[in-house]
Length: 231
Image 1 (tube, helix red, strand yellow):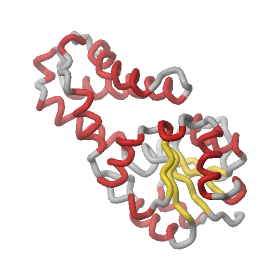
Image 2 (cartoon, rainbow, N blue to C red):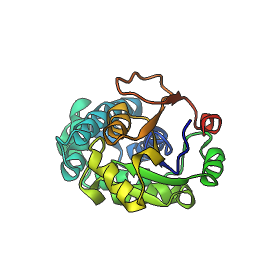
Image 3 (spheres, rainbow, N blue to C red):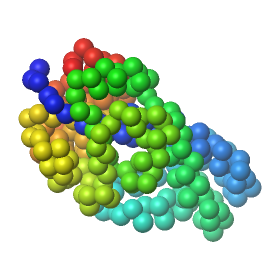
Image 4 (cartoon, one colour):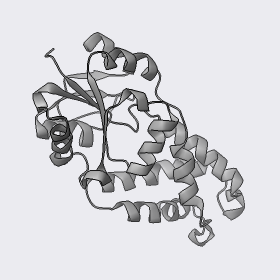
C-alpha cells in the first residue's frame, strides 16, 4: 500500500446511514401528516415507493439529467403516483419537512466513530458528496462527524457532481495536493469509484451489500472498521 496524505469519504450510504435516517423521518411524517388518510395504505408501501423513486431520481441527478430544484419538486409527486395515491393530496410542507428531519438524524454506519479517530491521526480527512450543501452540513453536524473532517466539497458548491473529475480536481486544488497522495472511499461505483478513476485517484469500495462494480478499486470492505487493517 502506498503512502497517502488525504482520504476522501463519500457521506450518504458510506458514513451517514441514509436508509436508516430516511426511514426514521418518513415514519414520523407518515403519522404526522396522516398519509394513510391520503391514499397510502401502509408505511411499508410508502417507504418501498420512496426507495424506488428516490434511487432513480438520484441516479438521474448524478448523470446530470436532473437538477436540485427538479429533484425536490417531483420526489413526493412520483412517490404518491407510485403507490396510486393522488399527488394533489401531498401536503405542501412534506418535502421541506423531509429534508429538515432526515438531515437532522444522527445515525452513522457501525464503526464510524471507532475508525475515524484512528485515521485522523494519520491523514487529512475530507468529504466529497453529491448531496446538497445545506442538508449535508446539517447531517455532518447532527451526526457528530464534523470534528473529523477538514474539507467538505458538495456538488452544488462546485457546480459538478461525481463522477465528473472536476469535483475531484476542485478538492485537490483546495488542498494543494495530487491524486497520487489521495484515496477515495465510497459506496457508489458509478460516482465514487468512476470519479476517482477519472482523476487518477485510488479508491476503496464500501460494499456492505455485495454490489457489483465494473470500475476498478484497490479493496472492497463491508465494514468501516476494516480500514484499520488497510490504512
